[in-house]
Structures are given as structure tokens and as C-alpha cells.
Image (cartoon, rainbow, N blue to C red; front, side, top):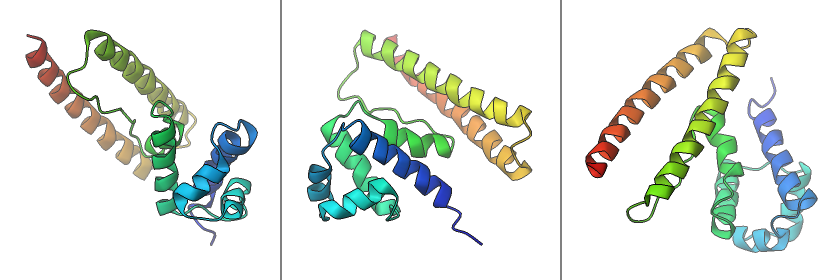
Length: 157
């Protein structure tokens, strides 16, 4: 039986390759220094010759967040995989414009996630256990959205 995480790992490494090698959005040598690893090790992560551990993936996400806090692609990769969406923590009281932008971003991400789930459900690609997990996640999301809405309503009024 193969490694159940191999597909997820290879998808992550494809993203790593795309952003570091193809697009050159981040310097591999800087990442190597940040990770405390040899540049060749980072190159092997990017090429898929060396698997990325969970700890290393976390450190890569920290590196990217430090370099460009608006780049959430690596974080979204894992969050969306398990039914969550990343939201930045605002520092201080958000302005009306920031709240509106967050609401729009959240709506877009929710719409994308729901569309993917709906498509997979209609295609019969989701197993019963997966459907239960999604149902629980949607219930939690609705509860959290209600709580957040109440907090915002109290803040605004």
C-alpha cells in the first residue's frame, strides 16, 4: 500500500516548484537559510526528489508569510484540503474598507469551496465518510459565521 500523503505531497511540491523555480517569486537560497538546510535540499523539495515533511511545509508557509503576507497560496493549499479557509488576523480595529474587502474575499472563497464540494458530490466522487466530514465542517462554519456576525453587529452598533 502506498503512502496516503504522496498525492498531497506531490501537489504541494508542484506548487513549490511553480512559485520558486518557474515564477521565481521567492529566492531558494533565502528559503534554504530560513529552513537551516542546504540549497540543494530545497532544490530537491522543488523537484520532488525529496518529500516535504509537515514541519518543513509549516516552515515554508512561515517563510512565505514573512516575505509576502498577502500570498496565502501555500496556506490555502492545506486549508482548503481539509475544508477550511485562511483568514488574516487584523491588527487593531479594522476599517470599514478592510471589513468590506474581508467580506468579499470570504464570500469568494466560500463560493469556490462550496462549488468544488458540490461538483464532487454531483459526480459521486465523495464517499459517505467524506460527506459526513463535510457536513460537520459546514455546520461548524455556519455556527462560527453566526457568532462572528453577532460580534460584528455589536461592534458596529
